[in-house]
Image 1 (cartoon, rainbow, N blue to C red):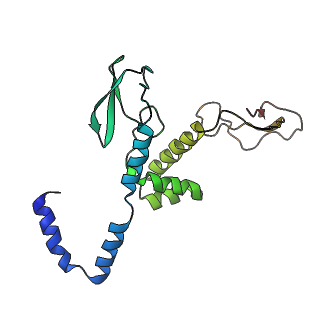
Image 2 (image 1 turned 180 degrees about the vertical axis):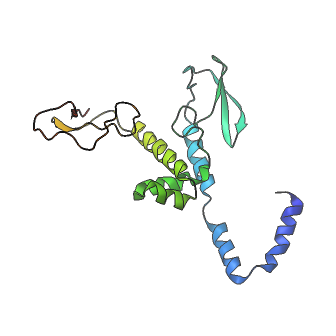
Image 3 (image 1 turned 90 degrees about the vertical axis):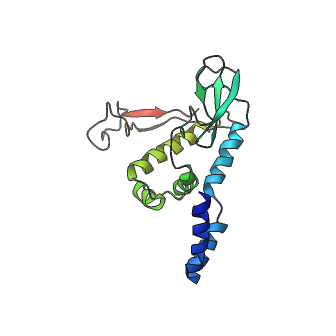
Length: 187
């Protein structure tokens, strides 16, 4: 904000009603979600950096863009940031990401999430799938302790896929194994 605009803004504070002043104070005391998200990204950025394109380790800092540290790989000459090659890459409105995580935790529908976040339903849908794929990547690959596994058959789902999706609901009524059912393998 320019200095002259700032002074004008401060002068206009005298015109606020008591209710407006209280609302302003609440807003000023509230934690800045944009700053919290930035701190999370910076924490992830502290780890040794490797190029997501060539997986090279010869990486140098290369300025900043949109508040994120940029890096350049000396091997392939490509630039990247901490979010490159992650599901959160190229998502905008970072200050709403923590609220998106809360929305997912509460199990709200896409339209309810869009309304709360004040974004389009298509944006809420895209964010939901990106955040869920991020959680999928964070799964532990190693089982510890005693694990018991059995084979269970569930109906094959092609939801979200554009090819080979059946045009009817449910599956066959026969009790035998069909092509619509697939054994679920837990690894």
